[in-house]
Image (cartoon, rainbow, N blue to C red; front, side, top):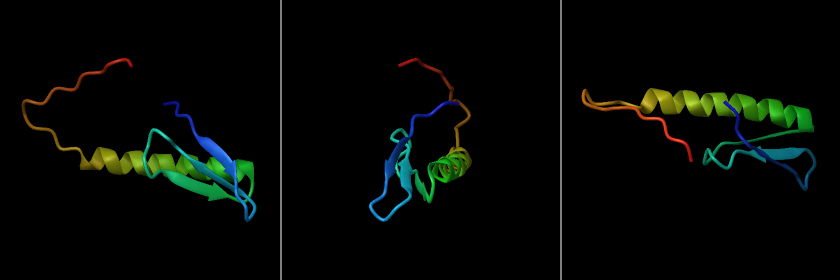
Length: 67
């Protein structure tokens, strides 16, 4: 899976990084590389939680669409 992230230098130093397509998925790091590593972990945890919360009925159908 490929996701676009926004990486911004923080006023206090370091970087803040967030994922526009995953509301609330945000992280930070002292360096650019650390911030990107941390957001990868945050994304994994975010998506894991979402998958656990999904409960489908017996008649539910999953359909993939392109946007």
